[in-house]
Image 1 (cartoon, protein in one colour):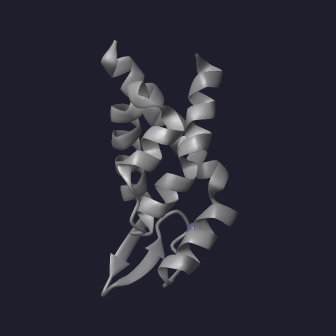
Image 2: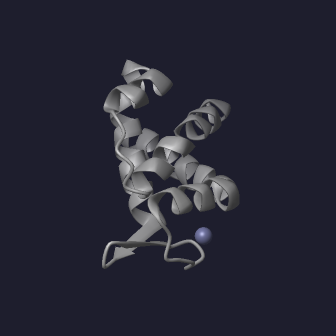
Length: 104
Ligand SMILES: [Zn+2]
């Protein structure tokens, strides 16, 4: 079960980063990654974690993990993928565990 959570978190890292950078993503993309049965959890955890990753002021984007910025959408996407991939995966794992506990 724990390794399953880790695999799911890994799959959702990119989608979460895209959401955090306000890059449009299709829910179908998430369903393709995790399957129909996990889609509700996947929607919720990617929404809540992406919310904590970035902030925007006057349409400029900042990284909330290290407070760097401002970035363009693409710049922030690259920043998060290169520097914070492991942080984001860990956050996703915690959030998925929380969701799974709540569901039981
Ligand atoms: Zn950062």
